[in-house]
Image (cartoon, rainbow, N blue to C red; front, side):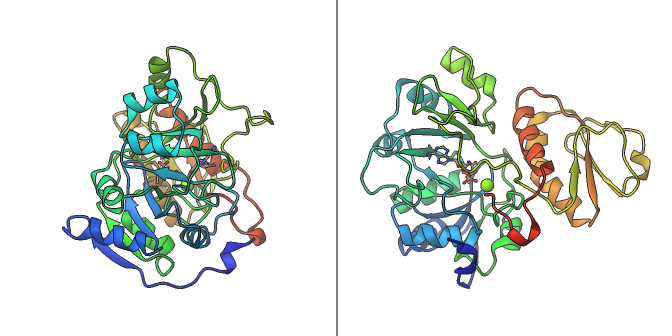
Length: 343
Ligand code: TXA
Ligand code: MG
């Protein structure tokens, strides 16, 4: 079904997270089946009651996201996660080490109504995350149940790291935006599939692979998309996080008219003719680069350039997640007529 055609207009309210009533108001809207954008430490999420299929359908419609793409259920703590999913020993060790934080664990679904079939896209597994952002935590706690939340952008667009990005994409399509300023991590959570043995990396993200391997005590293999028995994260289409401008990776020179996205002060030949230059981290800090990535893509794209040239970045630490997102931003797009088909 094409949910993009059935979305209904809504009046979108804006609340600063500093408003003492913000969390309770967000919880009230969620309980009534509404859609609330709220900050997490990674990116802003678009929240709905995980148990309410009507609310989840409205969420897919607002995002224009294909309904077969399952959502992450955000919970307050490991105890709540353990009621929704069956956490293996490895999952518990990772939860202990990284929750609350930018890590999502895929586990067998424990059954019951907590995360409805539509939110799991009919899978017998569930993706669980305990976000570290205090505002997210307050909203989930006030609501009491699990909150499904994809990134709060229209499908195929760059993920929002500021409330203003959410407004630009979803104004008039959702009920409430809770604004707590820019997010700190800036790329989405790392997703680890713990439903089988050994655990596998489904998506690089805010927790570096090496940190997870230290806790597991062994290497963390990447999911193999060709493994029919255990498919990779179903929402991970190649073209994703896409700005309008073309994206050219690992450039050694800049073409006239291009914008330059650079790192650690690098200025490849031609940089002096770039339409605009943004440095993700002049000091060469990959954590800072991750936090600035989506905002930088939006700004360069907003300048109306035909293409964004990106210098090579170091592959270690958060460099893996940054390279993954840039690779998807650079991938060939689905045809414009077909519309965006990613999350
Ligand atoms: O940082 C984040 O994870 C953000 C914030 C808002 O929490 N959320 C986020 O959600 O990035 P979303 O919907 O954009 O990405 C969820 C990913 C998709 O690639 C989806 O396919 C995968 O999680 N996923 C969800 N449930 C799954 C499952 N049961 N098995 C495998 N992959 C799953
Ligand atoms: Mg997303």
